Length: 206
Length: 206
DNA sequence: CGTTAATCTAGAACAAGTTTCAGACTTGAT
DNA sequence: ATCAAGTCTGAAACTTGTTCTAGATTAACG
Image (cartoon, rainbow over all chains, first blue to last red; front, side, top):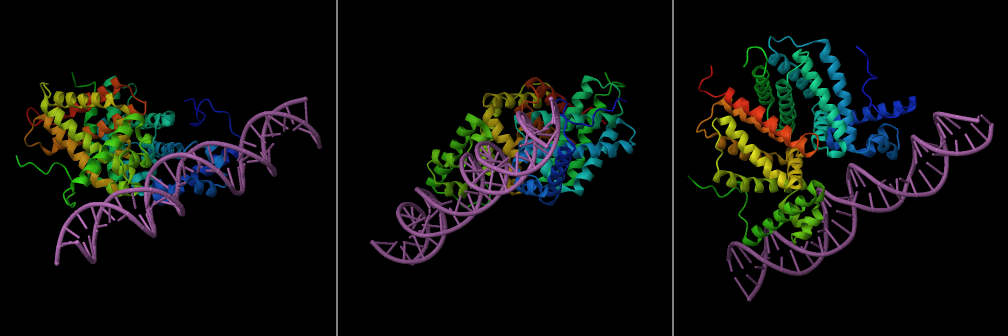
């Protein structure tokens, strides 16, 4: 497999070592503050201070708070994908495996609910100016789900099902984060939507 | 049918006529500004000025911008429910009827995309302090969907399906509003998720 | 090394959401 | 009609995201 240059944006100029280090410090500070108090606790001045960078510089690296948090999410997603890869889900059907994977991700988010809050709120609040980054997160999520299904070339129908699963995943997370749904409820919703996978499986279906 | 006192919050003190009028003016100004430029165009100072109310008063009626926009959405949802009631969907299956209803609602939103943007962004950005109001919107949406299914007493499974449909509905709207999905894509996603209705129908299913 | 362009810093300034406060106006009860 | 309590107004103040500026630092290149 041709190792891509990690996950940096394709058409951005290469960063020097110090710049790369700054970027890391910023993302680290962002995640740290988010872990404490969620979206509101990630204050740009404080991120700048914590990461030893001037406010203007912070804004040069991430043009808005939402950009910063979405980038933080990209970062976390990579970790998660790596973790999930090591222990693939062991369910019988594709639907079971997807549900298992998402529940595993959900449990990871439960460990840092404030961080989850910051990232998910940023993701859904993002306007058009953040579309490319949000899209990247979406693609990464799709890859994780398809991975867990264990499919080489999914049908268009299955891709639709995956899209719907992602919708449900995001929205269910929001209802949980805002205290309007219990963990059990999220589990049910995920399991329910994953049934779509079986419904669209090419084998044993008209 | 026992006509509820419209849709006002259950445990709030009754408003005088002038107060009711103020509330209306505020909601009207909010919708008007939102129609122009979406979430960002709804500026509290301007809402206050347009509705002839002091800023402090605006905040007494709606404790935050998000509260205001969620209330605006409640208002719009009532209109929509009334409109939809008059012309019930004419699809054969419950799934078709739900999809038809949601697409009709979607077309209504397309006519005022900026207003849709403001309301949906507020809804998903809302934190715990707005939970009761957001929940109310959610319940209203559930009622609309169940109405369109034409069911007296849905099974728990069907209620789960409806939950997932709502998740998909919200999230699909967001992707459309942020320019990451086309209208056609939203249509496909809605139709895809509505298949869950058939999957959970008590007749002809194990 | 020295120059030049890009980048970074500190800090002020600006924008919009939210809070606060003193005083004027309404409302409800006597 | 009058008093007390609650509500509304206008305006200033405060908070946090974002922008801007002038000067210091760094990086690339001769």
